Length: 228
Image (cartoon, rainbow, N blue to C red; front, side, top):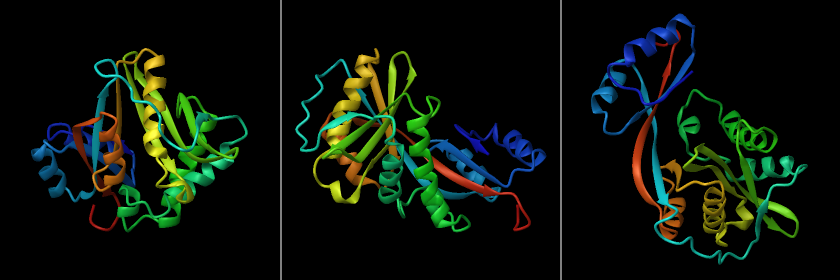
């Protein structure tokens, strides 16, 4: 199960719900400023797995910069979902998010979670509103998934670049095209998030005008005979 925006007051009800519904694993997020919630979760046996940082960009205040990347960005084409999945599998192999940080989760299956997510984003409007790909000789070597959270806010959800295409400005190109897509849908702001340790992505975002606005801790709690 998952819980977002956990507070110290909400925690008892969340735990009761998990136990009454025989949850095995709870993935819970709380603002890093909610120290009382953090301490309460630690007392209940939660373990910190990662820190998620959100960045935001006002799309109207300053112009979107031109794309100066060397690899063209275009809209995903039906039939490319397997290629996008392969990019995700290679790019996220061993990626140190909260799945890989949990020693009780199988590392291969943790890798597959990102590949599945990428493929679902290509096939289902529930997973993403748009998928953009980096095209190298007709073959996707990177992708980003986008969605509208509200009429005024767009979000970059998942971004990946295949190892062979990294270091060629693809991440910055994706951000430029993602901002243009959000703006075309009527959004005035765009947000995106990543793990605190993913410095290369954050540097790319800052270069195109994004700024950090919020951060969350991700905790895991197991409900079984190992002390929960």
